Image 1 (cartoon, one colour):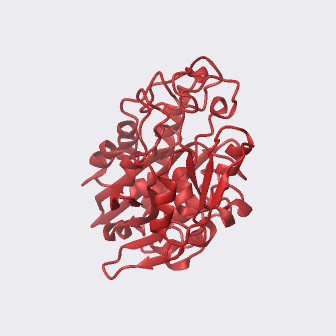
Image 2: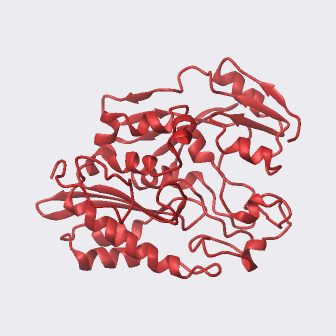
Length: 352
């Protein structure tokens, strides 16, 4: 591991000033960054430890029903917060389907957004990877690429974003609050992660020194609590990243869908909000035919980036399945295998 300087600021203002210097990285839970450093993939010259900064470790409920999740809130704490899980069940289910219990105890909300792709060529420093080393090429294009992107990819990079947490956040219209040397600003989560284009090494919209201070869920996100699900197809249900995942929410009124939310994971370099699918669902009566039409709309424009055409069909099926489960009502308890499409579905539902 490359030697590095270590800084522990006392305030957010001090942290962003320290991190604005070149070759610097923020350290929170460290569940991804430290692995990258050990493997020589990330080589920062300085770490800015933000774990003791005040005001970043709480879940705050606003008077209008919106909620503010501090960047240092642990994944496990958020998933097991009963008030949060009741209002945003798909988010809680996504969190519980990700990683192991030990990692969820350490990983943070802000760090989850910033985690790196799990592309094997990104992790192999002997391979060409434009994301890791701009201009070197992309060995994934002609390599083992059955798990790579089918939406938003370019010839420069076909990697996917691995987060579970981000998928329902994108569906629910979450907002990322950033602070940098120029002050605070807010960015919709659906726009926070950049598509690769010709510069896949530029992963997010963050400016030098900017750090995530919170993730905000708006008031209207709670309208989907009674009919929302997160489903995830993975190679090993106990602990693996998504091959494909889907987060959906339905706001039902008088037997029809007043509003719908759909987002996909495992298919692009960012969580993929499916507004075309939402438009198909709006005003429709719930049912298999409309769910399948919405699923096809969700994958409109998808194309294989390699040996992964199956992901398009798989994503369509997981969207339709998630919509069907959501229409039946959010269960009053999570299945024993959270987010698994193969888990027996608990009987009884909330808010139906």
